[in-house]
Image (cartoon, rainbow, N blue to C red; front, side, top):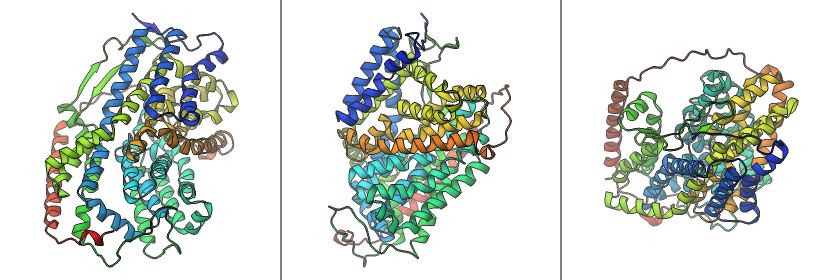
Length: 589
């Protein structure tokens, strides 16, 4: 039996929207006002969405249940798989004692919490977004900041907010690739348009982050460092997105801003070192000096992580891993059982790419790192078990959130909300980012939001005489500021920051910043559409013919052999440093 989606179940778009918005409004109410735990709010919202989908939209109960199951399965893999491995890698570093050396190293650069936040949450987080994406940046950077002594709420909150600037180019540019495939606009002009919007946000973001942590006055105290961080990031993001394409802006801007800020801090220091109010004063013994080898050993998990996630993003390696380890199947009872408004049947596939998934790259990094940091594999297994126990509620939350998102999409509820925004006429460019923001809030992914709405953005812009690249790019840019309040992202950040059960606090911490940044992007896109058209790139649409190419897996296997040799050389060098006598623990901190 095939069921057709309904966009306006009441034949009154205003009434349909009011009902369609109930599950989303419930999420806001539950987390902001009721202060529910994340998994409770997600489960109830999923139930509400299922009731509305079946009773109002007429979706068969069987399809609603299957849709929720499909979403929950996607939540478990690859999302939870990635989060578990990211936290596991960090826990290995802590268990081995190597994180104490990392803390000492960071303090030797600066013990100022404001500057540490810029280096880790903003710059390093961007690098991780560009390589891994899908929750890894927030999971790893929030855990690192908590380990350094940050207040858990601030650590998780600022990592979510810092993650806005790089999301559009995450996972080697996948969000823009998907937007291109759906809209028919080539990747480069979309990348250029996004790269002429987000760098403005990137310049302001470091000052904004420090103001949240410490206050505007305290941010002004370190304005030279804030300026170096923001300008270097924005410049590199602009250049790479406009001239190289969407694959590398996050990697280049993230690494470049780290280098620029570290070099700058060699010649400039803030007059006062700022730490949290109730935080004990720094007790770092400045007489202690770690050897280069000891520092490399301490950073080994993150060095290996960087190499692995970059390698996993290389297309030949990805093709080789998929050829050897991927199972793809049609979801039983759901595949081609729903007909979209345009008459096409919706394919419902599940891709279990257990080798090429980013979480597997992080797992491999963890397994390689265990002996490098001085642990046995038995101890590593104990750490893994403790990590699973630590994340049991976030896993439930993420699975529930993805079930919620899939029901909203499959039933047509999301399309009802989109239809209203698409009917705003001349003002549509102002609301185009809202559509992306809504899509990311629901799905937790800028990639998914682009898959949902890029075609709608393109068609609506054409109908009102606006260049479609403006609104398609706006979908991406608006989506990045929805990431920080997506229930999926909140669950990931809460897990990494030891805030399980306090997701409502984290949501209330970020929600006002999300709305503020969204409003800024809305006005900017409106100006791009009508007032500053000179920023719009010139381009030609993609051709209608697509040629299928068979991947050359032999090249991928060659790359994997090269990767194995590189890792073996690095591991050997690091293990040799283990013989170096380390300072006594009481001198470290």
